Image (cartoon, rainbow, N blue to C red; front, side):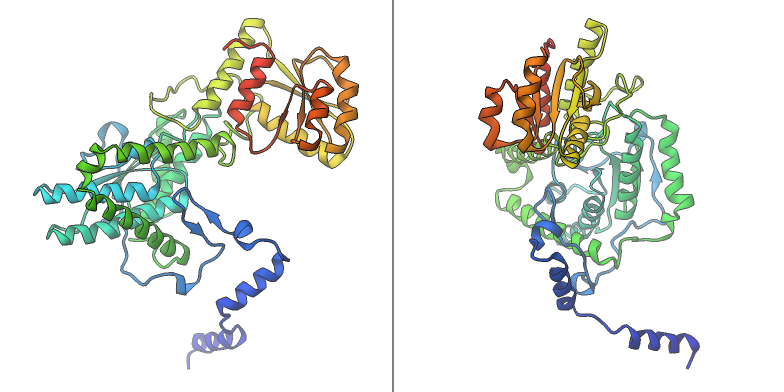
Length: 445
């Protein structure tokens, strides 16, 4: 027996297989009564529940579904290939991954039924890394079934381009990180050609992303890098199942043209777009530098990039930021928010940090202190139990509106009676809240 075989047998004896039931029992024990689904299961925009871990029984056995060629083609933005079927525009208007796959199938099926070929399908790739990988893998997998039903060639080229809907004008250097993860998703998902669109960074860096993925990461050496990964295989199946069900509904309704003409396409897009926008506006989804973790030293958007006129997730926050900048230019200084801290050290620090992030997204000048000072807006940062006395002390001593960090519902009426102008809290519509505070400090719309 070879040494390697002996070692393998020894490891198998030492570490016997652990059944899923044992893993689950241990997890629930470690959670100490906390809700498993709420703490560990993440639900995507498509309604797909992503589990905290996957095992071999979760992954189907299938042939690789990656690109047919050895590598992907680098395509500049001004030389993108013609595509017979595309969901790029749908993605840029808010479509989910399963909608994109279903709509690509429906468009393609209609072409095949009319005797027209489908050789290339176009997709935009966003920043939801694993879902975007699964989207492209599911599209190739399902397209083979659609094409074979019409007796057409099952091979198809997938052209991918980095998305525009999640790009930002402020802290635009983060866009380079976004396109890097998007390009990685496209390659791991099996794209045959890829366009990386520069947005606030030097165009040569877009080419460098291709080279890094190819020459340094060697992702062109594997036909289907996601094959065999339990989580990716399970997610691919979930996307495929949801997309296939949606495709069948479109077919039952008369096909792609009828679906679009009925208004169902616009309604589905509007619903998906509104859900994504709400997630960003309430900061449940982060756009680094725009709706969270702002660069407090930045003044003004990227000067060398102007986005198109289409919908973008960041547009609401960017409008708030521009309003502050216009006001600052008109009065000769940036309006100041004083984060006034008092009392419980843990609560005051946490609430001051939250407000620093929130008001920083609007471009305010921010100062933290435990002493009252001149400001355009004063935000009290403390524990709920200390707010009423805090407000009664501060409100009479400042002409600036006074806000409270948090949402002490039981004390709201008393605090308002003490002169507090309002509250800021996690989970609120941040665009609406910041707009309201801009109104209160006298900014012109």
